[in-house]
Image (cartoon, rainbow, N blue to C red; front, side, top):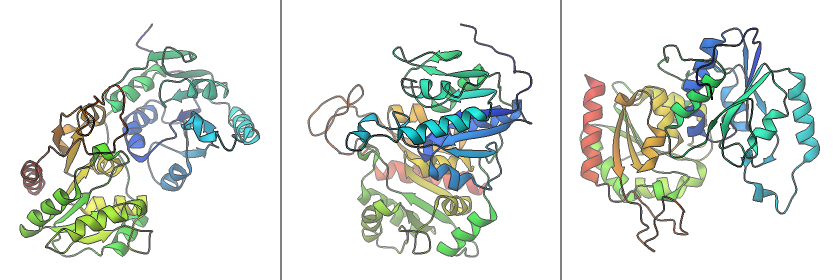
Length: 368
């Protein structure tokens, strides 16, 4: 297949399908910036979820508008999630009809191998539809083979290249922080003169990627003793984990969990706080990748292939601690090809001393 494509003429509207989580959105930012760089006068419509619409509303950047899609089996939601309640086929049909009426010039599938997402996006009948394709998936007009593991940012840039988009200078920060973000951050944690804020992020959606909370606590004490103000962030469902870290520390730490206005932060407020941080120490999860997109020095604790998949295009801002364990410590099964049933940490071989050393190096670099 041809691998180098010129920009299309007369592009007025672009659709990008990527209805997934925070880190996955950050991975798409270089590709979104490349599309806007190549087609500056086109409207870029991001087809995503409710959180995309709320987070990107009024936020400067490459996305002009979010089209919140209904629940579609296999596109942002696992097909088996509809076993008890069938999908709303009427809502799906109305959404496709509305999107088809927008007469997209380009439609880009940036959601997996395309078994479900390619036929869904192809119904929009754009002038050109591009994306990844697994062997069992329908083929859009232009496609690349779907492979894992890969660097997600580079893979999505390659999809943008199928649409004739090639990157200009990648802005830094890659993601804009608004005045509302900063105000919400200040409400949760008022800024102090000369603050040296270190944010710990002990949660992750996959328990295998979680460094033990007692090690986050030990790290927090080390950095607090060296003059840092420690804040521990987590979503409401991670409240017990955040409290376990705070409760294991001898020094005082600010706990940021719960809902906005009651000690927690929404996603925009988290960006406002990350912008103030001297350092973020995190498992491989969305807030880590937000911090990297904002140019905040970050220590990331990674499990093997996740570092390959999540490596930023500017690696100088990341200090990575890597666990190479592949076999479950409970049953011994290799988890590279197939996940076992045990929710145990695969990164607990990373020591406190290693992460503390990386944190000191990152803080020294940020102060230089």
